[in-house]
Amino acid sequence: MRLTRPFRRLGPAERRIWDAYPTGAWVDLRTGDKDTDDPVNGPAWGPDRTVRAEVIAALLLGAREPEPGRTAGLRLAGARVTGELNLSDAVLTGKLHLLNCHLSEVVSLTDATTSGVRFRGCEMERIRAARCTVNGLLELDGSTVRNGVRLDNAHVTGQFRLSRARLHAPGERFRASESWLEDARRPFTAAEMKERGLGQDQWAVWAGGLTVDGGAFLRDLRVTGGLRLIGAKFHGGIYLQRSVITATGSHAVQADFMEAGAVEFSAGFTAKGTIRMRSARVNGVLSFSEATLEAPGRTLHLSHAQVEELIWLPTSVKGGVNLGYSRIGVLFDGPASYPDEVRLNGLTYEALRGRWTVAERLSWVCRDSDGYRPQPYEQLAAWFRRIGHEPDARRVLLAKQRRRRGTLRPTGRFWGRLLDLVVGYGYRPWLAGLWVVVLLAAGTAVFAAVPPAQIDPDEVRSFQPFVYTLDLLVPVSVFEQRGAWEPVDWTQWLAWTLVASGWILATALIAGAARVLRPSAGS
Image (tube, rainbow, N blue to C red):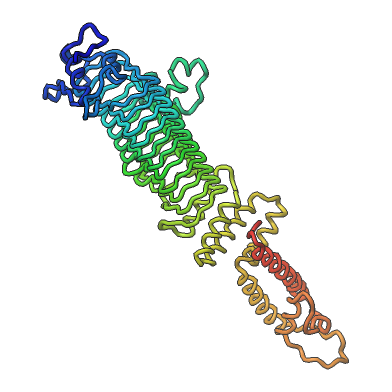
């Protein structure tokens, strides 16, 4: 049977793919010379390696039927594809697999449904695939996309692969590579946004709402621009080991409300720009092990998030870290992992891992640029108590009270210092005992040397300096020595000091005990 085609003339390369499509056979136009076959040199390839995009589209849209017993598909290597490959709104049953090809214009899969799309090692202009459904693998391994990838609200039922790819945001040509930090420090006006091609164009991958049922493998990726993954769902996890992202705006990754089985920014991952994951949910490990992070303001914004395990062991961090109001199951970190500014207010965790001293943890919880916050101290103390380290918990709560003291008025600060000196805010009650011993020893020695005078000479009494001193220290006279003897000369001042000290010690002990026994260990 003779098949008709909607083209008057096909080039030699086009004729080969036309004939091969019904069986899904490969058409390889490469010469075997590595330099010549590099897709970067695609514009110089002649007619024998040139294929019009409309011919590819016609085949995928049903211009030829599959051969009985075979699976149709377009598998093409080493071709120069001219024109826009427009497959928008289409339902494609044949797979599309391009290897080492050069595509000079946009590939559009907007609202399309496909059975698998692979661009491996290709040189491409731009990909538009908003709301696309890929029933299988979506692959861009080793490819270069010069003006960004759009995948907002797309759905990939298989894997999403971008390993070793090179992606550029449409607006990145307006940025000097050495000035990205200075540019990111200030907001742009509307005119500057338009002039510089920013706004939406600062993103190399625009994929808000993307759903990937399998794993998303973006290892060794090189990005000039940012990854916008707001609301994306990666059920099999997303993996960016050894990838390098250089932001052209303020954010290297914006992934608010993202859901993932695991997230790997590790093993040499580098980001110049903020990684923002506000309200994200990670059901497995979120790892920054051996990562290098740099941003002019905040390098990591992970507030209001839920993470089963956070491994925060970057090699280098330049910029603040915000973990406020997040819920983390296991936090594995190190003393050198954090910058000078860390926001921890509202952070809760089930377990801490890492080699920390208590002093280093105390330094960690007091780095909030907004000043004193009680919750980080209470959370840390609660964890120490949960693992049975009560002395460390008391040390943390004592540090909390000392930090809080700086926020009080002068009278409050004075009373706080007195409580700290006498009983350590109730967390060091042994201090009160030490003061009692010192005062008892001093009073006993003085009153033994300069005994007080008996008030009623007719009453027969034997003076005991130790008992007399103890009776002065106790707020309510127990041994009836205070009313029987009266200090003489300068020892009156000592007696008054002992009485006042007794009241202060008793008041401090009561206040400290109330503070310790309060359920919230509050202020």
